[in-house]
Image (cartoon, rainbow, N blue to C red; front, side, top):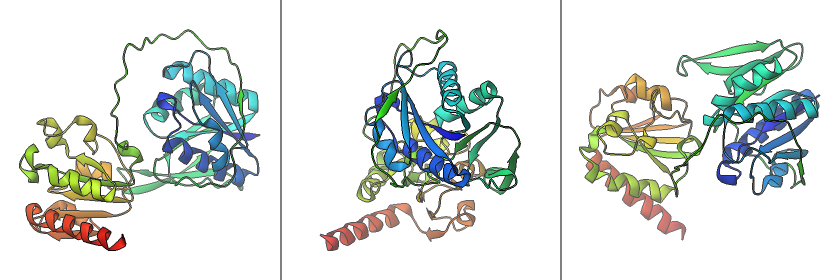
Length: 320
């Protein structure tokens, strides 16, 4: 009996989401009184560093997994779980986990809960919680299968260093021929992926046009945040679609979400209401977003944001 964590490595690099998943897996393993094994597939520079976050052993399957194919990766994870005797498999609830959790569960004949937000209780019954109804409620699930697959929501369990680097062991599994041919991979460089961002500055149609986005980017740069936008802004081409957050865009859980000139339609709130702190800047005191905000500023963004930028600069200057 053990816990296996799939630690994805897009572009051959270990990402923050993988460290979060290993940290969560360690908590699950501790609750069960067992060991944690981390698994990487394909190129994974620095995979041994996963030992810092609680992995007692790090495995790597290199052959046949140079590009992501959910069918092949699911086979690899399931076979690795069988080899190490893992009855719980953990992964991040991101684009990788969403396409893998169900496939892995079927191959292991396992119970599966996606997007979990708590460490399971294991005494008497294996139970875990997740947010439902766009974060308006919390559901508790009891997993009765001998095997279990969990995907954990990003930015729920910050990476915690509890150990040290470990050696990476190569293992082999029998993989099916891939039915997917990857011809080109386009990624956004030079910015933190929105699902991994701890600070996010977002704006909507209240900015009136793409030419006014400079102050949003300046504020984000000053505080080390990622930038985001509402759907209408992405739809008209003011900002790239990968910045669109909401029910039909990217769902995020940052520590701080600053919304500038966004009314707060329910579709937008569904993707950001799990943020730990929400700050809303809007000149309309009746904007729906204020009901979900922890802090609100009623005022014109073109007056408030420059003052906020100036205050941040003054604060940072005082620290130097």
